Image 1 (cartoon, rainbow, N blue to C red):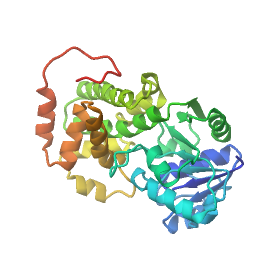
Image 2: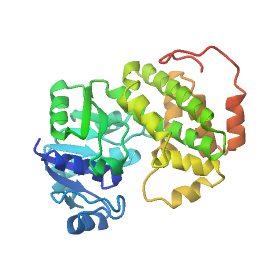
Image 3: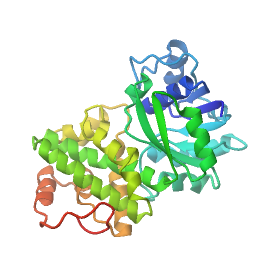
Length: 337
């Protein structure tokens, strides 16, 4: 895997291109926005999505998808809701596709499908892995230490991807639990919005800690109902990512929730952003999946109600606080929380 192409020129795609370049790979970064390849090639900086962070000079950017598809490994880093469509474009632009690593975090809103299922719907038989974990793009792009989960059902492919991307400052930990890694990455974004609302509303750090703990129980129950292993969610792609995303304004989902809690309108916050806030579109998809599996997720449901059903924050918080007292359920159980 000497030639790696990153499909998606946002902050996270740019950071992963830097990771691959530092690992000694030949790296091509594809971006749909025409100004992104120009600034990367001419100035070694993604001025639109990752301003102020110098990039490895070896990274070559393009807006030609056929050119990017000619690689030994593709990292798919487009927004989650666009992933199936861009995969279809890749299939049409190349005779065959190399193995792909899913690096977006979300659940397909239209179908409620995991991203691996959405991609395989348009590219049956495509070898897949999924990468997720507690990673802020700016820190990764700067070469600061980070660790991630790398999920792949094919052990040989997984080991090859670890070898292709791993280094002293970027440490992938291999697992075969593709479902668990994807659910952890998707649901934590929704819980982070709840944590942000809590802080923005002035409810305090005790309340945020409760959101993190009970949100972790929710995402673990959902993952277990989909056949994932609870220990996967206790690792980097679940608990690690959840804690990071719920405790820093660097998180787009947490900062979005914080702004909402302080009284901002969702459309105003989202309209001022270049990057996608994945938890907004993942919330209804998470609730669709949970409903189909009979898993109750009150925190995720409250976020969904505020964002998509016109509920007020006061009513959503009041509904959570009015829930009956009950024993604390162990992580991974499908019952109520």
